Length: 358
Image 1 (spheres, rainbow, N blue to C red):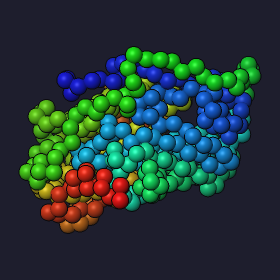
Image 2 (image 1 turned 135 degrees about the vertical axis):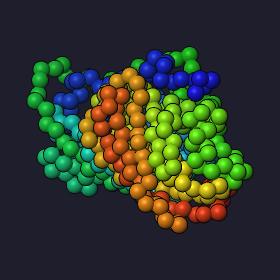
Image 3 (image 1 turned 120 degrees about the vertical axis):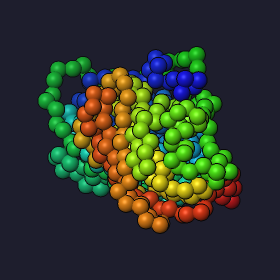
Image 4 (image 1 turned 30 degrees about the vertical axis):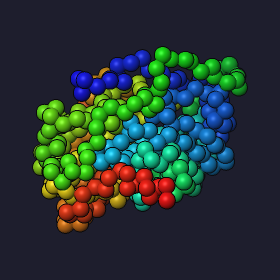
């Protein structure tokens, strides 16, 4: 990673809601965000995710299909689905809460239906409130590509907390002045790192690639460069993957965005399975479930995800993972199931692009 840009060392971009916004209902807060009257948080500047619609029980976020989000296969891994959908799931619940209320995600679950990648144009996450009580909200999400084709479907459970009202100035509904920077936001920059060409998958086993990453003998993936991944412990059926923790990952509550935690959990589990696969073998995420244990502040250091394979058959596998903060506290646990296609290499990303155009 020494030769690649370190986004997490740059001054953070974005902002957070003024406390006066808490006096608004959740729906009014979301509508203010859509109108640009509340600043976009740092995670929005990192990956380009923006809210574009908010209604009663509905919320939509769009994320450009940046090359910076590519995995080693050249397409987006399943964790990107969580990365782009967690905001829509939570904010759909937020639209149903009264003033002086905040939410926190307790659980996120996604099922994956088709691959996506830089050829997808954009990813839209359309959240919908399913049910809410005074303390818990349930929502669902449809993740679609730029042609409106369904990429993934999921659901989320959120806790709702009522705050004690406090004295504050009235919220002023005016557009936030956008700051100018000498460089584009990270997702708009040229992608660094490399995806493994199709012949590379045919010549290298998963364990060989993981060990090469550990020993800096293989180039990191574009999303690995963007998020500051480091392979710590590659073993057969178990790996520990680290991510640089910084304020760039923060949501409007100034905590590490749940989608980022789900993403590293997924990628660690993917690598743990990959270490057991022979050369030229395709695998894909079928589903991902993440339980969030506690809020994760952006403490300096590394967030780690330790993953292992629970079961591996000829065509099906199950994995789990534990995500810890830089201070060593468990912030999330996760599980995923996978499809294995032995002897079948990953298609070239151009094949996906041709399908998208067709």
